[in-house]
Image 1 (cartoon, rainbow, N blue to C red):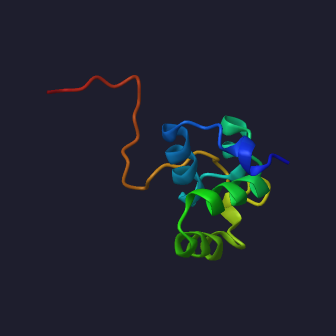
Image 2: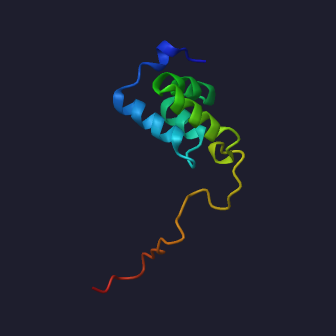
Length: 97
């Protein structure tokens, strides 16, 4: 497991992106690990370091037991997210404008 000093190697943009991904409901911890090399416990340490105490507590409360934050626990036919309001796009149709 990485210690706090090793977690500090990220740029400001990477820190912002990791925090954003950690807060997103549909972004699993495995995606953060794949992109930044931080496992779930390391993300928790990261959030503790780079968040205000109240924000960290709110995040932990929100993430505890959240099924969508783990790929293995997800139950989905299609792993990609698509809004119901999004139109289907067919490559065979020509736009008529």
